[in-house]
Each structure stands twice: as structure tokens, then as C-alpha cells.
Length: 417
Figure 1 (cartoon, one colour):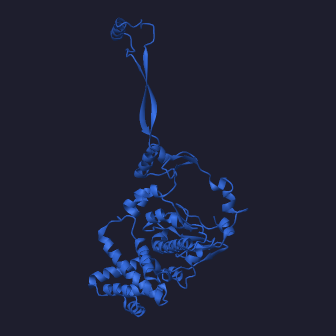
Figure 2: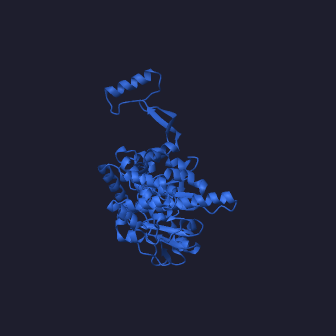
Figure 3: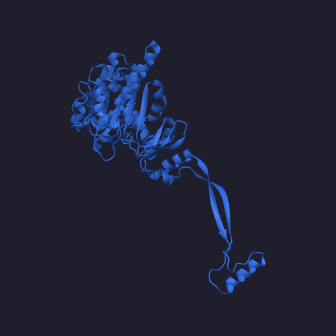
């Protein structure tokens, strides 16, 4: 998509891992969660997003054993980030406070600024019993684990990405990370998306309030959303974003990924998204059963043929059967064919059985629309059809194109707008 997007506006790259080459004509950007935490309410949202993105896929969303530590880590990070924003500190200072378990400087900043709620929260944690406090600091340090690398920290110094300006521009932001860095950079990606989401909501609300034209919606195209962009409240964002200037396109291997990340809320994803495209190769039975149930059932006519049972071999048994049938009024069976009966009946069966959905059809995909109507549509691979081929490659194939995301193809990419 890079050649086409470059014709529309600036193309930006956010790569906190520092491992993705920068294509020609693309500008690297630096982003930090600190500037977005100048308001206490925003600091709470940023801390929640950072902590929520660190929950492993294998862990239940409702596991009470770790919920306590995550909630306490949020309560610690929010005032630290707020203090850093108020004192013009950068994220490396916050990482240092957490790793050294030092709350005194941030507490002094909050007291001087009159941020009483944040100061009280931080002071309460600082006076917590030592063993519990150790667990809180350790959990917070784990949330910031992605910032232990020099390249990640460098991407936060003197941040130049302005989410508000981005939402008002025709720019495109590519968020990239290689597969081995996904778990580490996920909190950073979620924090960035949370800031963009807030800016998009604010721009839309401001336009409605002032009567000015509503800006074009910001589109979040999230590939491998359960891994690189595990927004904790994705279901809520999808359901409310459409009416507030934010559209979400999310790609999953199957719904088992969603269940592992978002728990019971994942069961409603098929209802929240206006259109769902299902490609062949899904192996999760629950996903296939849900799609098959949406497609419903249909009546299928069946025909059965029955024939009188006459032994095939000659002998006393066959002779006896023939005599019995002839005595019942049937015509001679010694030289005629045995009569048969044809019965037609109707039975109910799945319109799209599980095995058919799993295998798919060559060159086709299953589509579920906003009315839960399920059907087949033909696919148009970009490399074989115009105008998509020209949009992706340009008039001529361009060297140094950005590595596309996807299974087994190097860097995973989250494309914004």
C-alpha cells in the first residue's frame, strides 16, 4: 500500500524495536506515552492500556490471581506518568523510577502541582506493606519491559508524533515489529493506538459541537490484532468507534485467538463488525460452528429407491421367494426385473457445514454482512487485478517496499489510517 499512500499524503513509520528498514519516502516517528498524560484522567487511560496489553494469550481474562497485581500496577503507573508529564520528564525517567522503586521525586512533583488524587494514590502505594509493594513494583516493571532496550527508549526521546494533527491529516502511519518482538512492543503499540483513538474521538466531538465539517474517519487496520495490537477493550472500541470517527478493521487467525485475549466478549465480535470475511483454512471448530449456525439450515430433497429382495443365486431359496411374490398377485418374476419403489422426502441440513467452511472454495471467501446473511464471494488478489496492482506497486515495481505483515512473512504491520 505504500506507493499509493505516498500519493495521498505523508507516510510515517513507528518501529519501537528498531529492526524494520525505513523505505524511501517514509519518515520515522518517535512516540512516548508521557505527553498524553498531562491530564490525570488521560493518565489513567494510558496506564490501563499499557497494563492490559501485557496479559498473555494463555491467561484467562477473568483470572483473579493476577487481576489484583495488574490493577495495582495501573494505580502506580498512572501517577508516575502524570508526574513525568507535569515536570517535562521523558519516559526513561519513568522507567528508572520503576526499576529503582523510587516514588519520592514523582510524589514531590504531584504535591507541588496540587494533583491531590494522583499524589494520594502514589503515597498509598509507597506505604503499602513491603511484600505487596514489591509485587506492585515488579508488575509495573514487567509492563515497561519493552523499554529496556536502547532502541525502544530512543523511540520515546523528544517524541514528534502528534496524534491530534495526525487525525486531521491525510497521513498514513505504519506500526511495525518483527515476530520475535511482538510481545515486548505490544504495550507500546496499544498505548499509541489509545492516544490516536482519543484524538479521533475529540476531533469528531469538536466538529459536532462547533458545527464544522466532520473530518474523515480514522481507519485502524490491525493485522495480527491479538498479538501486536491487543487493545484491551477492542469490543467496546469497535462498537462505539463508528459513530465517533474511528473505524476498525481487525485480522485474526480464528476466534480462538480472540477468546484467549478478550474472553467471553470475543463471542460477540461477529455481531460488532459490520462485515466479516472468512478465508479457507480455519481449524478452530468453535469458530466454524458459529459461522455454520449463522448460515442456518435449508431443506434438501432426498430420493430413496427400494427393490424387492430376491436372492441372487438360483436354488430353493430364490424359487421360494418368487413363488411367494407371485402368489401375492405380482406378475411373473421368472424373466422380469424385480419391481422397485422410489420415495422422495425432505430433510433439514446445515446450509454451510463445518467441513465446507473449513476447506472453503478455490478463489472464494465466505462473507457475513451486517444482517448476518452468509454467502460466498469471489476474491480478487491484488497482484492479478487492477486497479489494486497499480495501487500497491505503482506504475512500476518500486524497490525497497515496506515488508508486509502476515503469517510467515517477516514483520507484522499495523496500518493506521
